[in-house]
Every structure is written in structure tokens, then in C-alpha cells.
Length: 164
Image (tube, rainbow, N blue to C red; front, side, top):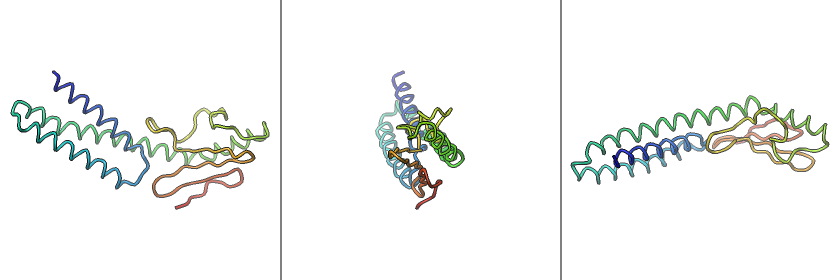
């Protein structure tokens, strides 16, 4: 029973880590390195468990199930990260429009985006928060989102422009 709970805990942790890494919009090579570290840890677990014949079935189950659960987490996290990116691409200008209206009504820009009263802010993720960054500069603002390859920046006077 205790071994099953341990495998369940490993699966839950692997799912969490998979989603965490999948949501990140970093260089894919970094994710491969992180997963390689997990594979080394799992291989060490198998070597230890293989020496005890009573744990062989559990070790084999762990070696199959834990990476599969992490792969599911990576897939889910990647989908979440891509959705966040696409929301920023498609709805970023709506945020700029809402900021302009807010400025017309109040004479200033809000401290935080939720003050705009939008139904939702584009770019949200489950574990890592949103990818759309906002800075009020008093008489202006800066909106940013990006990944490991390209960043998009907009201000009160310029639409989103990409930079490498």
C-alpha cells in the first residue's frame, strides 16, 4: 500500500512538473535538459529497486507510468502556454483599446490591468501566471509578452512590435 502511495505521489509530482515546464515559453533545449535530469533520477530509482526482487514490479510500473504522466503534463502545459501566447496575439490590441478608454475617462492609466474591468486579461496560465506584463509609467504605459525567441512590446503611442 505504501509503495502504491509513493508511486501515486511520484505521478502527481511528475504531472505538476510536466505542466510547469510545458507552460514555460523558454528555449525547448532547457526543457530537454530538465527532463534529462528527471530521467537520470528515475534510472537511479530503478537501479536501487531492481536489487530488491520484491520491488521489481513496482519499479517497472514506476518506470513506465511516471514518464507517461510527465509527458501528459508537458502536453497539457504546452497547450496552456500556446493558448496564452495566442490570446496575447489576438487580444493584445483590445487591452490597448481598454487602456485608451480608461485614460480618456480618468486622465491616467491604471496601476494594474484588472482595474480596466475587462472580463479577463489575455495570456493567463494555470501555474505560472500571465505572460502579458504591464507597467504604468505615469503618463504612459508599456505592455509586453514574449517567449525565448521573440518579444512584443506596445506603448500608449505604438502598437505591438516584435523584437528578437
